[in-house]
Length: 217
Image (spheres, one colour):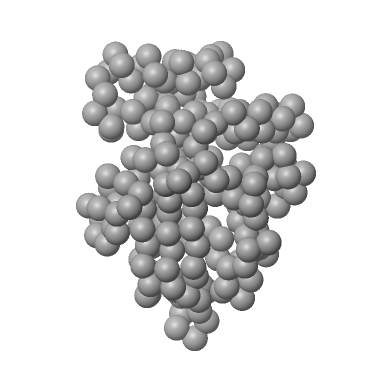
């Protein structure tokens, strides 16, 4: 089985007097759906930032899809294979229309405008978001923004999904719709969430971040 992500003795701190992550070891295999649990401020989102290269570890090694990225150029190509759903969808939506936002990443992958538009429309259709194609993203509700943000990353057909509190701002119907979408996806996932009911229906493993250490549950 392919191993998509490996962390070896990974450490990080914002202040040397307060280490946030201490020599973390972790493996994520192809098809794994893993819950990343922990108290607020324990470093869960920081760990996501380290995985995609938005922050650099103080020490340790990170392997993504068999590669060892170290500089920004390495991460730029690898990010095209990772779908990162931010906790705040407003950080992810910035184009004039929903269709433009979903096309954006696909165009960055080198697809033609026509091909990107087709992929974006099909992705929105699968997520039952066709009616929002011409809408202004920032005028949507919190739940609608969350699903559109998910569409922007799924359109790129990533191999790995990093989902940061995906059920925030969702009503019960939208939450159930999101769950059904994620259950059907083949991608490996690392999911930060306090929604235990949601996680129990989705993940096959759980890990807990406490005092800078990662513990398998």
